[in-house]
Image (cartoon, rainbow, N blue to C red; front, side, top):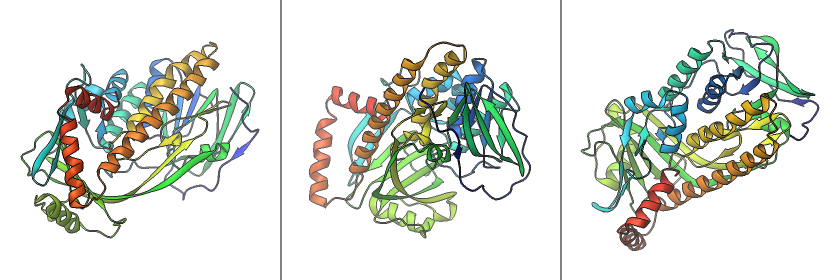
Amino acid sequence: MATAPASTAIPSPLPDAPPPLVPRPAADVVIAGGGPVGMYLAILLLQAGVSVQVLEQRQVRSAHSRAIGVHPPALESLALAGIAGAMAREGVQISHGEARSAGRTVARLGFAAASARYPYVLTLPQVRTEELLKERLQALDPQALVRGARVESFEEDGPSVRVHGTAGGSAFTSTASLLVAADGARSSIRTALGTPWSSRLLPDTYLMGDFPDDTSDGPLGVLYLEPEGIVESFPLPGGLRRWVVHTDALATDASAADLAAMVRHRTGHRLDATRNSMLSAFGVRIGRAERLVRGRTLLIGDAAHVISPIGGQGMNLGWLDAAAVAPLIAAALQGEPVGTRLRGFERDRRRDAVVASAQARVNMMLGRPLPVGVMALRNAGLERMFRSPALAGAVARRFTMQ
C-alpha cells in the first residue's frame, strides 16, 4: 500500500451524546461507520477470525425508511453473514416488474432467470435490515459496535494506524492494522485523507411516501411512465406500498395530500393521505473517489462512490464492496502479499460503481417528463424492445446488478 499522511485531522465533533461503550485500545481492523455496510463488513471479518472495532458517531439509528431494495447478488453476499434467510422471510419478494402508461401495460419484466437462489428483488425497510445486521454482529461480538464514538484524527505508524476520537465525552485511541472508512457520502475519513472526490448534483428531484397498499398489484413493482414524470410503486412488508414521484423541484414543504394528489393525477389511483406513515423529498447527487486504497486506509460504500437512489443499487453496491475486500483484509493480516489483489479490488469496484451509476441514470432518464407525443413514441419503442426475450433478459440482469 502507498504511504498515507503522517497525521490527518478531522473537523469539529457532533454535540455531546449519552455515554457509549468505551472503544477498545486495539483491534485488527477499525471500521468508521456503523451503518449497513460497516456492520456487514464487521460480520464477515469476525467470521474470518479478525478482531474489529466499529465506531459509529450516531447514538441512535435513524428510524426513517430509506433504502428498501435488495438485489440478488447482495442477497447472495448477505447469505455469507447468515441473515439473508431472515430477510427473505420478512421482506416482500418482487419477482416481476411492470411498466404502465396511460392506463395500459407497456412492458413486463421477470427476474426469475436473474438468480437461481434469489430470483427476485427483495423489499425490506433499511431500519429492519440494520437491526438484523446488528443482531448478527452482537451475536459474534457484543462489544464490536460502539455508538456515539467519533473519529477525530488518525495516523500511520509503521505496521499500524492509530485512530483518535471521543466517545461519551472522553478521548480514546484505538490501534489497528487497517482503518476502513464506511462513514457515508460525507466521509470525514475521505476528506481528511485528501482523496480527490468528484461530485455533481443532478437536476432530478423526487417525493416519496409509504401508504397502506390498497392496490391489487400484490408483490409487483410498478413504474408509471407518464408525461408529467414517473411514478414508482413498490410493495413493502406490513401491507404497505411505497410511492415515489418525479417532481419539478425539491418539494421539501410538500404534504402527504400533495403526494396523493400527484399520484392520482398521473395514475388515477387514490391514496388515503391520512394514513401516510413516511414522507420524504430528495434530490440526487452522485460522486466518486479517485482512490479507494491509500496506505492502511480503505474506502467502501458511499464513502467510495455515491450513485442515484433510483433503482435501489447504492446500498447493494456497498455490500458488494465489503464482500470483495473482506477476504483480502483477512489474507493481509495473515501475512499474505495482497498488493496486486488490492489494486484489482480498487479497479473492479470503481468499474462496478460506474456501471451501477450508469444504470441508475438510465432509470432517471426514463422517469423524466416528456411531451405527450414524444412519450407515446418512446413507450412504443420500449414495448417493441421488451417483446424480445433476449433484450428483456439483458435488462433484467442489468436492473438486478447481475
